[in-house]
Image (cartoon, helix red, strand yellow):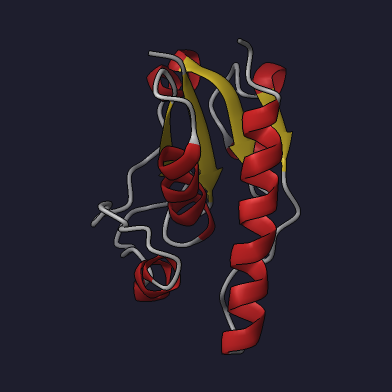
Length: 131
């Protein structure tokens, strides 16, 4: 099954929401996964759960996952959030970096704007999937 990999530093917010958004609206043959480049001792941000639930999407990821060369190799596209240079070899050739801010210090309104931005970017990515 073709896959897209979303990678942020901690795999706790942006990549988790992007994975959930993609899996909710992508064609059935496609799947998204998410991971992080520095996940040791980290937790998925509870805001990721609540922001997705507001739009009817359930986040099932409960623990951050470390990005591996295997995850990168299996992905058709690797979408990063400011950490492409820290991903395993092979990511740059199939990577794109999305300048989406993290959750730290954001108001509820700003967090919803981040979700809306992610949703638009995921929808655009889905339109570009190979048929």
